[in-house]
Image 1 (spheres, one colour):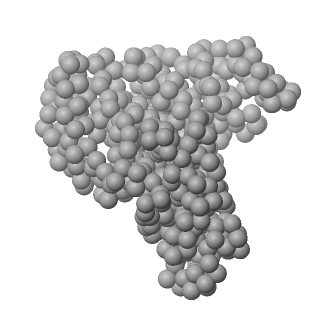
Image 2 (tube, one colour):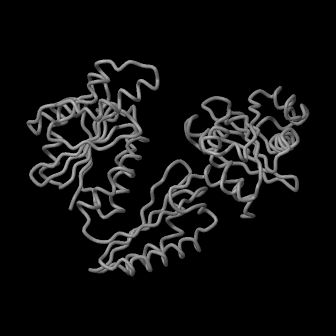
Image 3 (cartoon, rainbow, N blue to C red):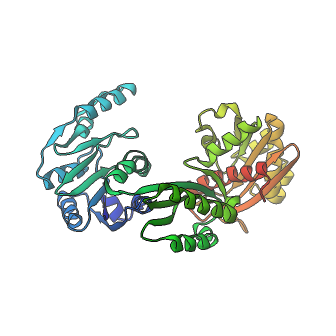
Amino acid sequence: MKAGLLIIGDEVLSGNVQDTNSSFAARLLFANNIPVQNILAVSDTEEAIKDGIHFLMDKVDLIITTGGLGPTKDDITKVAIASYFKSELVLDMQILQILEKRYAKRGIALNELNRGQAMVPAIARVIPNDVGTAPVFWIEHEGKTLITLPGVPSEMRYLLQNELLERLRDKFVNEAIVQVTLNAIGIPESDLALKLAIVEEKMEAANNHHEKYKLAYLPDLNCIRLQITGVGKNKDLLEQHVKQFQDEIELLAGKYIFAIGTETIASYIGKLLKERGATLATAESCTGGYLAHLITSISGSSDYYQGTIVSYDNAVKVKELGVSQETLDKFGAVSEETCREMLAGCLKKFGTTYAIATTGIAGPGGEVDGKPVGTVWIGVADKSGMKTKSYFFNRNRVENIHLFSVSALDLLRKFVKGIE
């Protein structure tokens, strides 16, 4: 079988928004033995959407659309789909009731635009959407399948992985599938691929008429999910071979792999600290509290996390963390020396088992001689010692802040586990 992706949105075609949905979906589908043959981007017009559907219906068995499902008048994906399949839009009471409950919880009355999101093509089967208000539905027509997904990347990814993937496997994949996902951090995708080239060669050699193996790289900022997939008739044999490939990957890249499954670096750190009965506090400058946000986004983080000092201004570094003015004058805020004094001050202030400190230049301004935008010093410490490291990320401000924070958690992981 073959799949096609229809990416809907003027913002993508204008270059104002980068399309990350198609690359994520293509990788995930490929890893699950549903290869994508076509990826097509079209504008927010009924004619363009219908032309896109017509083009793909001729070439693939499965079409997945993303975008154009919001409450505003320019979100016309479902109107175009209903028109293409000569189906009327009808009010889906289940969607309407869900929307009413969600808006009521927020103390907001459902207006006509929001109510319109409960309108779906009469021939469609509605798919639950627990992460947004966009209508997600599934249409079967003359042996072809069309599925809609929202354009918001976080919603699209969640729905594809958690609501649709198993349904797609049941329909389009009639063989056993064995999958293991390893989560890696702190290494570029290209470098990781070089390390694992020999494993991919072994997978290729193991492929035959009865079994097929694939290694998919599903990258996010500074994190990469390595998805090992085996497809075939004999599930026991697939499990045996997938485990062998997993062991080889862990042998070659074990220091970068922090977890198996869907765990994030923040949830992994939480589990690591809980296992040791340890506590953590942070001293943030360039991350501005985002590191604390990642840590506290994990349920139960109050068991091990005590708080942060956002010492964005140097005066706060001096007053709250005990950083000396002499250090700041001589070495600057973005320096190993300042980072170390922030760590010492954080440990003293909170009395925790571990501390993390971040000080850097997120950009786009703030560059100084020898310290370009994207430079950061990160440190971790306990009462017996410290580890500091300088990083450089050439991204925009928001991505730099995220990368600084995730790298800080990874440095703590290595510090606690004794990984060099």
